[in-house]
Image 1: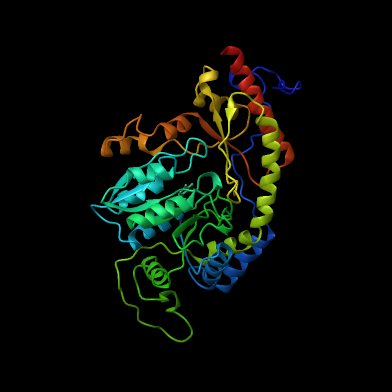
Image 2: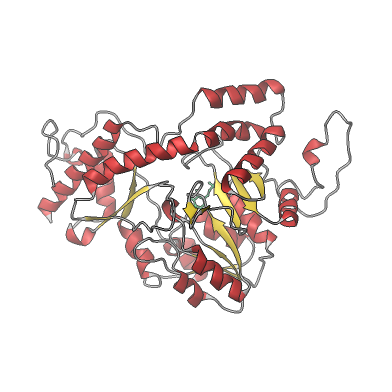
Amino acid sequence: MTAPNSATEARLAIEGGSPVRETFLPYHKPFLGAEEEASILDSMRSGWLTTGPKTKAFESAIAEYVGAKHCVALNSCTAALHLGLEAVGVGPGDEVITSPLTFASTANVIVHRGATPVFADVEPDTFNLDANAFAAAITPRTKAVIPVHLFGQACDMDAIDATARKHGIAVIEDAAHAIGTEYRGRRIGGSGNLTAFSFYATKNITTGGEGGALTTNDAALAERLAIMSLHGISKDAWKRYSASGYKHWDIVYPGYKYNMFDLQAAIGLPQLEKIERFWDRRLELKARLDAGLRQIAELAFPAERDYGKHAHHLYPIVIRTEDLGVDRDAIMDAIQKENVGIGIHFRAVHLHPYYVEQWGFRRGMFPHSEYYSDRTLSLPLYPKMTDRDADDVVRVVQKVLEAYRKKA
Ligand SMILES: *Cc1c(COP(=O)(O)O)cnc(C)c1O
């Protein structure tokens, strides 16, 4: 390992030394430009702010991009996962399986349906849902599975789909990290499974802060999802104030208020056009980070399968804390004091107080998830970063690990 930059004091900033960076590098900054500004102005000047022509155009663009027949644009991926579970009939008495290494909402939506959350452990190298653990967690009450394409790498969907089909289990893919991800020659979202995307501010593309979508190849399901996303009122209710005159609408289901609106789609449309450029830049930055970090003995990295394009949504590292004598949180604090922001994706959901107290999960149940949960942090990786930013990240991690190695 190379020594910290000689211009920088080797003493950690957290112990009173000077930080590697003078200014803070945020964990994420969205890449918004003139196209997004023009598109949002166009919507504002047209007077059409809520769900309308831009949302419809965004739905078509997403469906075409991922290779799905239908897309329903929504106000979040959480809404998409919730609606997806509702659409396949998940309710009280049913069990839904997912992996513990995910965001809160993947598990919470199962509870929102009145169903029972069941976890299955992850693969010890990719940290994606283990198809064998999924198979072993199935009971006669299992109604659905939510594979999470963690970090932007696809789960092994052939194995998961085959097991689900054999048992009559619905598959709802959590593709919050996986817009643009490919699996064996096709994009995630086009498989025919219900697939939920997120366009939250930190995701690979954004609809301006919040946003989501569900894709499907089933026309009847898509129509029901559209109705459920807007109060359960009859089809195309968003057109009720059009020039052809006021039209009555009918409540056909007790739906939700989950619709995306045009100001969101106005930002999402030009973002989608830039997605390949964003990905190219992510790859360049990732290569820079890899070159500096892969040689550090105390770090490990999630395995990358060769079955398709990885969206590289995140840059997670696994810190072998057993070789250092300090825990992940100490390293996390030290890195931030050097003026580099970090994220944690994720602390295992089954160890959070609600899931322990209400559902009886405990440490020891999902060892691969727990190993990762205790040792990971995510370093900045986004197209707005400069090469220098990436080099600073490398220097900070080198400096911090060097300092703790001496103490170990
Ligand atoms: C961000 C995220 C979600 C939720 O997305 P929202 O659009 O914020 O609701 C769900 N699952 C995973 C894995 C995520 O990272």
